Image (cartoon, rainbow, N blue to C red; front, side, top):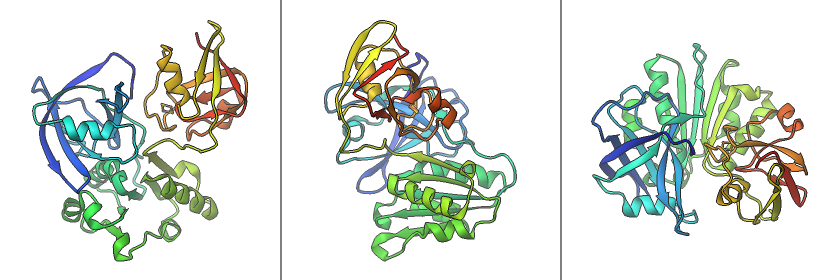
Amino acid sequence: MTNTIERLSLIITQISQLTPRIYRYQLRATSGSELPLITAGSHIAIPVTLNNGKQDFHNYSICSNPNQREFYEIAVLRKENGAGGSHFIIDNFAVGTVLECGVPSNNFHLHADASPAILIAGGIGITPIISIAHTLALRGRRFSLHYAGRSKTDMAFVDELQKTFTRNLYLYAADEHQRLDIMHVLADAPSNTLFYACGPQKMLAEIETCARMLGIDKDRIQTERFSADKSEDDKAVVLELAYSNKLINARADQPLLAALRDAGVNVHFDCCVGDCGTCAVKILEGEAEHRDHVLSDAQKAQGFICVCVSRAKSDKLVLALS
Ligand code: FES
């Protein structure tokens, strides 16, 4: 999500139900003109109203082929325990709904050379992976796509993927006792393979563990997460803004970013899952508990913290903000 003023006016031109809980939305420019060029793995911020009545923007991966500019498509999973954004979209959006969206951005950086790629998707994590597969196919690159889910009924895009990527696709439906063996997939890959993955935290953590055990360099793996890591041990923290002496209380269940923005502090942000670094701010006093996936050790040592996902070990953080 972005807090820049730049917006893109889009109209919903098609809605289709892909699975019992996933809907696809086709979005075109209200002006009728071509849409901004996007790259594989891009996401777009969609305006939603949450259960608590607040207006917000939620990021959705653009799953249509990035090589055409007539429309974008997103797929929305109705989340059972979310903040309400997906319910709002599914229950309220209709063909003809006009949306003032964020301009698309991208946290995946697709390699430009001829190295082979392995794409790994779990559940709704297939959405950014589809656009990456389209781009790799267009470039004539060698790749395989491993897609796991609870059942084929719950897995969106299966028919389309089977038609388009017949020779690259491996499906794993848990109810058919098909298991994605991540260690095996990683171990079998040629040594110059690049990996792109999107899915639940558990799957991404397993990829990281297997990669570490196999000595695969972190730089060869790119991931995108659904949601931020949370812990039941999260505690409330006081945020002091060093340049205004303002004190803000962040509840245990409230991201520091949300507490800052609710208090009117202008902190920039984008992914909200610790992948992009846009929300990084500097700590002047206090100790961070880092949960991002983007800051280097040097940046952490300099005191930076990604406030969208990270928390504090100390009871208070003094931030270089006003
Ligand atoms: S908004 Fe992307 S890391 Fe915080």
